[in-house]
Length: 197
Image (tube, rainbow, N blue to C red; front, side):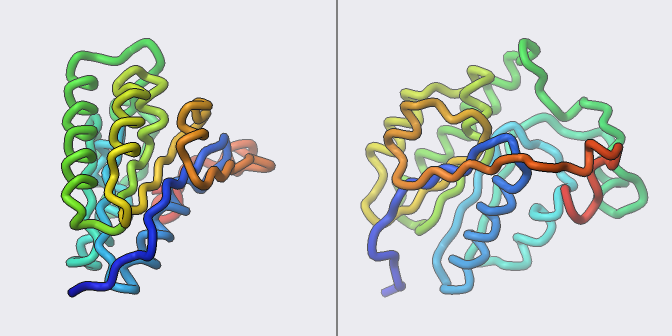
């Protein structure tokens, strides 16, 4: 019989500062170190060049990751380090510009989240950027409340994204806000390969 958590809680990492996904990935790494099963579902992140997508398969069998979002036409060159993200925006959803495909993709992600959580096979389930998917009307608060409300007792859930609605704060056991004090963007320094992606 595998080791389980004593109790699974609901955590939220939010705020306008950098570090929400990074904190969630750090927690995943810690859990995997104890041979706990982790599943990460990324909402609105279809880019296939982020470092975590490359490193997590090396941590198998303890961590699985699936990304749902728009793809990047330059992913292969970026992933190999021969190019960097140009900020073209093709892989990002902008406010008011969601498509039927974006909604369908987010629904696939939320359906997978419910299946993974309810399976009780995973100790830690991270729903990365799901709060942002709420703001873009790709998922609903009711969907999240149902998933969290019905989760098995020993499953820990982490939700990330900016501007967490009060309803989500109320169902969470821990809410951490990352506050931006200073950022390299202010000096004109773009996202860096190996650090931001």
